[in-house]
Structure formats: C-alpha cells, structure tokens
Image (spheres, rainbow, N blue to C red):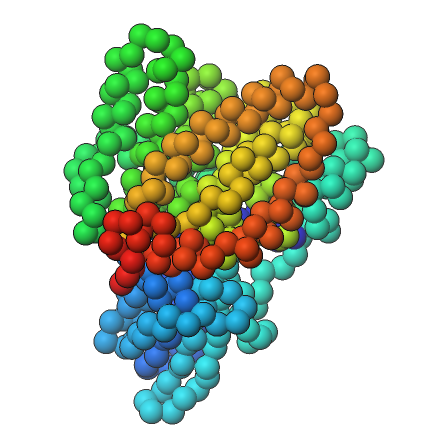
Length: 404
C-alpha cells in the first residue's frame, strides 16, 4: 500500500477526483512536457457530466493557462474508471504525446501506462487482517505500525495535516454568505455553532458543535477553499469535525490527535487499495462511508480502544453507509454532500462508542475487510445514475440532471 501522504493531501475543493486529481495530472504533464505550447483535454464519464459544477475545466485552464488549452466534455466513460481524461500534448501543430489518466479518488491518479511515475508502495500488507496479524505478532498498536513503515519526517507531516484541518474548521466558522454556484446555498456553520454555545443541554450542545465543525469544513470545500482530503474533498468535513471536538471540548492533546489521524489512515488505505474512495466509482458510500470508517477508528483511538475494537468501530462506520448514493444536485458538492458530512461525523462517534460497549460483550462476526469487499461489489451494482453523474436521485428530482 502507498504512503499515507498519498491519502491525506492538503489542497483545494470542491472535489478531490474532479478538481485535485485533474489539477495534479495537468501539473505533472506541464512539467514533463515543458516544451509544449498547446494542450487538448478530453474529460470523460463523470468528469464530463459533473465537470462544470466541480470546477474541473476551470482548474485545468488555470493550470495550463486558458489560452493554451482546449477542453472537450465526452459523456462516455473510458474503460478503467468513470473519471478518465485524455491529454493531447502539442508543440505548435505537432502532437508530442497522448496520455490517458484516471482520477481515482482522493486526488490520486492512475496512468494508462508508465510514462509518468506512479507513487511507490511503502506498506507490505494488503488488507486489515494482514495488518492486525502483524501487529499481534510484534505486540504493537496501529500507530506504531504506521511509524514502522513511513519515513522519519512523517510525524511532522501529520502535524501539518492537523493544522490544516483545524484552520479550515476555524475559517469556516467565521464566514457567512452564499456558497458559489447556481444553487445559492447559504452558509450555516457559524449559525449552528452559535446555537450550540447558547444551548444548555450538554448532549445537544456537543452534537451541534460537532455538526458545526463538519459544516464549516464542507462549506469551505464547496467554496473551493483549502481543505484536507480525508479521504476525499467531498467527505473532508467528517474527520476534522471530530478531531476538533476532541481538541476543543475533550481537551485531547495534539500529540494524541495526530496518532488518531495516523491510525485512521490505515483504514482509508485499506479501502483505497481493495475497493474505492471515488464517488464516481462506488457512490457516496466510498466517500462519506470511508470517511466515517476512518473517523470511527480515530475516535476509537481517542477512547483508548485496542486494535480489534478500533477495527470494530471502523467496520460499523463503513457497514452502515453501504449503498449510499452519490447524486449531487447540479454537480455541486453541496446538496446533499455538506449535510452528509455532519451526519457522518456523528455516526463515526456513535460507531466508536458502540464498539467500546459491544466489543466487551461479544465478538464482532463481521470483519472490516469483509465490509470493504461488500462495498466494492455494492459500488459495482449501483446504477451509474447514482455515481456522481447527477443523472438520478436528488439531482434528477431537483431538475439539475446536467451537471454542466
């Protein structure tokens, strides 16, 4: 499996697969072919159907220079993934190269061939069962497992990720107004936070606080501002919400929170390796479901659960999002995406609490790896209208079938 640096990325919204991925591909191609003066880009499948709402064309134009690129939207998907791009690279009228790239979720890329280097594999294990067996053999926890295979600077990187998450929460809580796009959706994170601090019922106050933090990040993402993929832009509000709550309300020190983020990354990596974190490939179960599982694992670490109970928490976080569709209204990462981040954060905390209580009463019969396999198959079975095409579900109900 790849480094967690490939999972947690600091970038701009609104979509890791539709914005960050195409941007990274364009930057790489521009750097590789620095003698090129013109580019023709064909966006296929979901990139074409919801590209305008996700700012795909805008980020590519900004990267290459608007006068240097020509973009075409092609609704037919390429064979390997719904988020396919073909870059034609020209010097004057001469075609230098033709490169096919897939944006597979979380800003990650898969190239048709080996013309451009792929990220290296740093973890020798391929699923959670292998990881847990290794940890049992060595008598280590999941955080120690991460440190064993990441480089010496990884702790510093985790602090960068945490700082970016917290800054995004705080920025989102301070802003009001309308989120960009034709939906004209009002920002509400600041208002939810105000309701929370004015509420005297502690249980309600805590849930409102977590929700306000999730909304804050998701509204920032929808506005095209800086976020952290955890594991994607569309689901970027779930983990920061719970981690910020742990820091602010539970007084958990940063050094424990970065450990929790590292542990969560293992589960995201397993999903990314064995299924998908792309809404266009697996529906929203692959985004919010994955984020919920990761955050449940992180909160499980905060609750001082052992490795197996952390697995239990993550398993529940993913299992109870199985079948969740991705049907963004108008192709924007706003409805139902922002609200789902709030639900996802609360559900992640519930999953960890369930694991803490139920795990000592009976052994969980469903493994995390099993749910990942089921999620992958469920994603394959989902109709394409419910996989980030804006052709069905809420998008169709609201008359915004055409994401462009």
